[in-house]
Length: 193
Ligand SMILES: Cc1cc2nc3c(=O)[nH]c(=O)nc-3n(C[C@H](O)[C@H](O)[C@H](O)COP(=O)(O)O)c2cc1C
Image: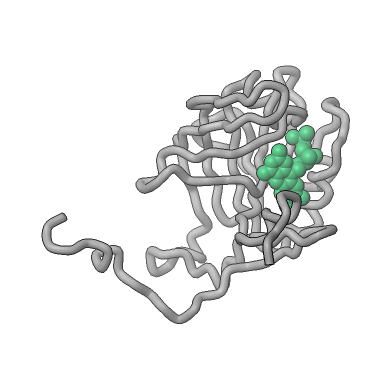
């Protein structure tokens, strides 16, 4: 079958992150974002796609800073609370009863209890006038919870980083599950290339 444009987002799994920002007046904001893409490896740059009418976007433009917090599956309720379109004056840490974790390199607070925190500064903005914007952030500090990285790699089946699949009228929240395959990066290279 052929999927029409308004159903096309149903075919790939998307990560769910919570982006924390602060307005120039000092109001703390949190919003879930699924349109998030690292720009290759090593992970220095990350892109997010944002509709224009977002306090998150205004705040990033105002302060040039944001934190991409990676929540676990236990955060679905808080994700939904932060997805509501509150007035700009509303402190969304308070609304969602989320606690701050001090960030190291940016003034914007991180969210306590998440699995990983990417502190970013605005690197570039690609604007589609009146519609959407692609924000590219430079990751200046990335911290993770030790207990999920004991072997050096994330134990994702224990950490349960939140992801989602879009449906017709809602979102199915998901978590990654290994297929049992682990393949070395080196397999991708032939000879000395
Ligand atoms: C799981 C999930 C993922 C979302 N992903 C995005 C996204 O990638 N880009 C976007 O502009 N809005 C996205 N939204 C909608 C915003 O989170 C929502 O409009 C929120 O109220 C924006 O808050 P703000 O105005 O405080 O920035 C998503 C919502 C949910 C629940």
